[in-house]
Image 1 (tube, rainbow, N blue to C red):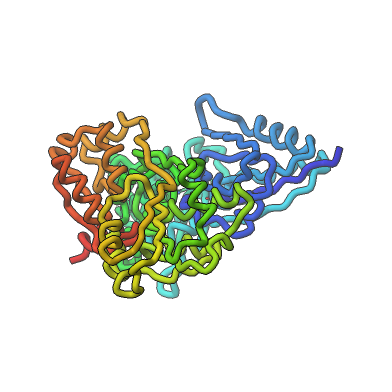
Image 2 (image 1 turned 135 degrees about the vertical axis):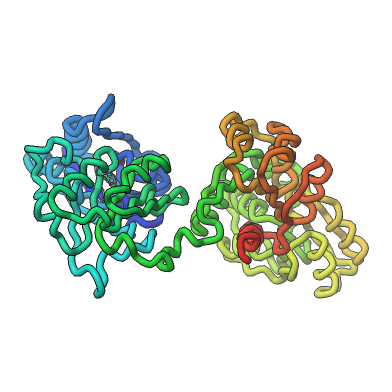
Length: 505
Ligand code: SAH
């Protein structure tokens, strides 16, 4: 049997999109992915559906996988001919026991490649605005492990040298020993007032920064409940100008935002929130159920070339329609010369993924505006119009098109059904004021959510409610909810824009 191959990949410091392009590429081809506690599990989205995923949470103490077991696992998988990705937090070669893992492979004659990653110590510079080097105050940087600080005598760290170091000192794995690290530096002559910063959960929406003098940092971290993983920066750099901290100043930074779409939609929405530095919490309130096997749908498809206009009112409708087409061995050519309208930019973008350029998109993304604007754009009198949309969509659009003289057929491509989700954690967070926003992107999500969570809990708790548009807001009002915000641009981005706006003065 051919020997396998191992990619030792740096996952980056935390936020999933900080992995390298090469790292993401090799994740896509792996037969087996062995990943660490510090590697963001969101990166597994790159994995092949049939890839074997093995989590090896390595801790310094307690029951967990030992380094020897990991080495054995790597050898076993690669010897079986697999392409293995060993995914490690940050950069694999910085305090990553990289050489030990490679030694085993080299001995067994197994090929490997190292894909570097952004190490946590470097990431804090960017994400906490702490410049590790600066022409004014630091021309050198040193990375140190804080893990060795306790066993005083056998430490390989030259404390005397470190205490005199005139640049920036970056400690990894230091939280357990922070007090003794500070003491040893001071014992060796470092000033008690040396600026020190601790950055926990760097690059995540939960990132925290504590700044204090060296002799006070340990106490301050304790008071503020700072927990690992954290990087400790010592030296003038730690006192960097807070104006450089762009990340924590983002309007959605650290905001806990609950998304309530279907599971797939939630992933999409969560990614948008993360890219704006917010913290999404996924609660699937609904499940999307295709209705493309019904006789009505199949009959409509058979005569689809008879329609003058075909209208899509959601990205879901587009995706499900095209999936059904594909299943029947057909493609976008079924539309013939029919014109296509989309309710908004997102639906139009989805259509373009399938090679269709929407002929019409209204300026305001609601069913009502779509109807009114389409009538004035195209003379629909006597024209055959097909709506391919959710079974739950309101009748307003049909009525408007009817009035415009169109011959309308409204065909359900999918429906949303309520989904039971584990909700104890969410109720607890809402009750403890740990949630900033609840978001709703459709009336069916409102229904699904409040089937499971009492509306009076929301009204009495300190949580704000944001709705994507008037139809969703109407549904919320019917249930007695007080709405803090209805987006004026009825897209997910519009909803997030509106939430961001509330934090801008
Ligand atoms: N190879 C990793 C480091 C592994 S050692 C890298 O290059 O980043 C583990 C230490 O890394 C933690 O104790 C902590 O000091 C640091 N670390 C990793 N991820 C971090 C994060 N998101 N925020 C702060 N520190 C982090």
